Structure formats: C-alpha cells, structure tokens
Length: 293
Image 1 (tube, rainbow, N blue to C red):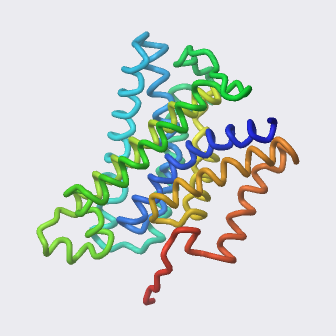
Image 2 (image 1 turned 60 degrees about the vertical axis):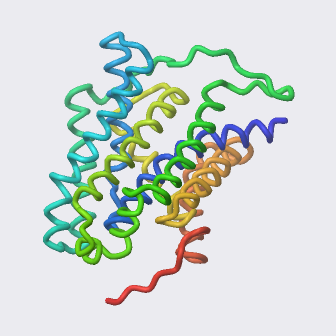
C-alpha cells in the first residue's frame, strides 16, 4: 500500500515535470534551443496566480487564467526581445544558450526585487476532501494534476498533428527556409510555440504551487532542470516522450525519497541524465539525427 502511494505521488510530480518538459521539447523542436529561462516562466506564473488570488481577492478560475495569460505574454515577449534577432541573424547556438541563461537570471532578480527573496505561502486553491480509492486516501490535487496533464498532452498531440498551425510548426522544425518558401510565417510560428509552451508551464506552476505551497523567485530553477532531464530521458522533441520521461522521473524521485534518502533524490535524478546520455542519447522515444558540422 505504501509503495502504491509513493507511485501515485510520483505520478503527480512527474505530471508537472511533463508539462514543463513539453515546453522544452516544442521550443527545441522548432529552433533547436534549450530555453533555460523556461523554468523561470513557472515562477512567473506562480507569482501571477498569487497576486490575483491573494492580493486582488479574485476567484480561482480568474487566477488560473491570469497566470496562463501572464506566462504566454512573458514567453512571447522573451522570444521577441531576446531570441528573435539572434535567430534571424543566424547567430551561433551558444549565443542563444547564453542569452537564455541571462534571461533566467534577469527574471529571478526582477521578482526578487519586487517580492523579496523570502518564500511566500501559496493558498490552497481547491478545498476538496481526499478521495478514497481502494483504501488509499488520494488528494484531489493529485488526481487533478495527473488528469489535466494527460488531457493536455492529448490535446497538444492533436494540435501538432491535425491543425494548420501544427503542420506549420512541423514544417518549420524540419526546414525553416523551405517553410518560408511555402508561405509559412516562421516568426509567428516560433512565437506561437513559445506562447503555447509558456501556457503549459503556467498550468504546471499552478498545480505545483498547490502541491508545494511555498513560492520563491528561485523555485523554477531546480524544477526546470528536472523537467529538462525528463525531456532528455523521454526524447527531446517528442511529445509522448516528454510525458513518459516526466512520469519516470517523478516515480524514481518519489521512490528514492520514500525508500532510500531524501538527500539523494536529486543525485539520482541527475544520475539518470548521465546514464541516458551514455546509453541512448536520443532518449527513450527520440529519433537519432545526424548533423553536419
């Protein structure tokens, strides 16, 4: 029974990793950029929900929508201000990577200046009693997190595979120059991808803040790194891979904390990254790709 409860808790945190990993995967698939500022978008969404919910006293659904809107605006704005000119001038990838790290540090210090460095308690958004399933008392937030993540993954898979904007995203991912010749606005497609990934991060931030009700300007750093590990484990660029990687990471972390040591949990997580890179660099569901240099 204890083992099953640990697995369920792992699925909850793994679902959050998966939501964030989806943003990493989509951005990398379009512009081959590991957007290390993506983790801090989670922090932006958490503070946005806090301001609307606590300081403004508005309902939960308004706080969730405001968090998503704020993250989408932040994601698109970061792409336009920090990455767009570098992309259009064919800057080296290392320049984009350094810029992403710079944006991450800027966001952390900006929110530290506004809200202070101390943690702020995040109020519970869902006052629902735990649900009893087969003798297990499972919190409503846990079930909600897993269900929302699965539904969003399915919706995202359908959007990428069946819609016009999804086809444009895949075309830009395969060959941006050829996509331009076919009349696809690559800049708008990239901006949409950043906005969509940031919106998913906002959902993840709200769910994460309910599970771990303490927000700080640095809360997105470790969460973002673990989500990146999940993306690499599942296969960078693969939507189902992000989901699978997130679930595996969450379960491994939960079992490590429950049966080995809470202090070793992060070491095990990043140890998995090393093993995956050594054994199967493309990830569990990723595709091997050759690149000329």
